[in-house]
Length: 173
Image (tube, rainbow, N blue to C red; front, side, top):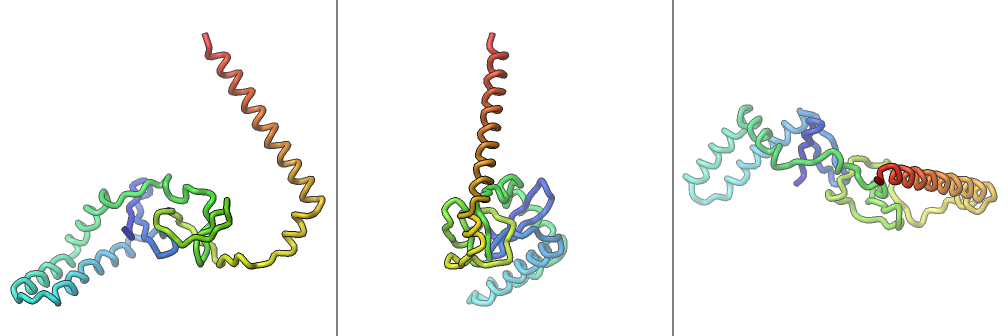
């Protein structure tokens, strides 16, 4: 599906071939109108004149505002998306030419299933050179900064473990 309804936000999301984009009410109304008009196109190749006329009549009726509103309302429960599933994977970075898995560095095609709502304004170039950043990674400054961060993470993990152990001891009869 290229359209999803988020009950939590009361907003529609539309797949743009690169990411899910939150849409205004007006944009969704236009999509509903396009859907109703597409029924006319489907009626053209029908050989039987009566069936073709019935289909065209149905297409025109589907385009009235009450039916368009009904189409959108009845679609909501059929096209649900939970807000928590949007942008849920922090390891995916959506670029103009695909999505980078930051754990592996692999560039993969854009995918609806990733449920990404953001897109950076640059393309991924795996062959790009970054001498300043690479120089920093080799520098002593980077080594000491990295060591400081590792130490901080270790202290936080030890504190968490102590707190959990203390909490478990107080809960035991």
